[in-house]
Image (spheres, helix red, strand yellow):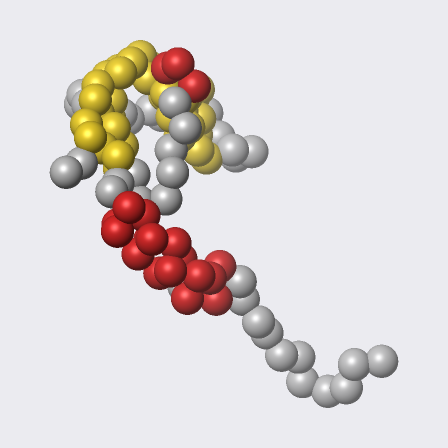
Amino acid sequence: MARTFDLPCRIAVEQSEDHFHAHVELAHEVGIQPGDRVRVHGDPIQISFGETAVFDRMATVTRAGPLMRAWTRAAAYFDFKELYEVSFNPGRVR
């Protein structure tokens, strides 16, 4: 059975020519493990280009059980190849 709990979180969002990101920081330095799920509550966040914003919201963390955690680790191992790109240049490497 999955263990679920709610906690506050802070979302930092930036959309500029230098950065395009959204980072979620959970309160109480809760560690997330393979297979765990985090759902941030609230309306979708929209900011204009060139803006940076910070939002405080609630999040629900659902801990994975031992079987789901093992499955996630195994699947991640075999999907690792999707994280890199290999290209070949015509001609000879000198």
